[in-house]
Amino acid sequence: MVVDGSGRSFLPDVDTSRPNAARVYDLLLGGKNSFEVDRQLYAELLKVAPEIPNLVRENRRWQARMIETMVKEGGVDQFLDLGCGLPTADNTHEIVQRLNPRATVVYVDNDPTVVTHGLALLADERTVHFVDADLTDPAAVLGDPVVAKVLDLNRPVGVLQGLVLHHIPGQDRARQAVQGYLSEMAPGSHLALTHPINPRDGGRLAEFSAAVEEALRPAVQPIAFRTPAEVAELVEGLELLPPGLTTLADSCPTGDQSAKPTGVTRLVMAVLARK
Image (cartoon, rainbow, N blue to C red; front, top):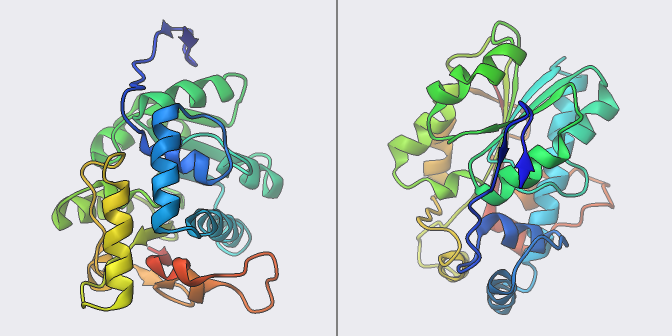
């Protein structure tokens, strides 16, 4: 039994009969919120891509750097983390609060496992909130009573979409899941986005990407790795901040010894954009 922020109790509907994307991702980050079915898929995924834990860790490091940029250079003090996944080390609110203890963070996810852990983690927080909602419906998310109360859309918001949009089939739906948020937000709002790609050009990266996509399919249904051009289309109309839309491998700052990109990080595109 779990009690949410409003004092309501509920029994989460967590399916342990099939692998779960959030739990597998947690495993890749070194977490332990998993079941045997998740660990089996994790083992199969490592056979296909042994370095994939490096990719998800680099994705987290990249996102932390983008949060710092938004706070220090963009003056952003309110964040919307869409498809946040399971709590792990250095969560968004922990990074934000180190930079600005008064900043507001709203997590959004509709995975029952994530909802359970998220509400439990944030039960005593005052500036951090969790909303059980579908990120593919921006109007519903932004109209949620909690979101409407704690986020001021007349001031810049930092939107985080880290490795979530490949869960959304259809280019139009994915574009709406990006633009539907930014269009309602004030100028100066930022978007930090990462997305796995498949160039579909017959090359080695395309073959590797297809193998990873297939390995993930039991936990991520549907799944849509996009071409770099399709990812670029998702952020059309926004100002791309340096270095623009690049792979995680190419976005690593020179001299940053804490993040040593490997070949697998070319599987993911990353961009920080501003309205």
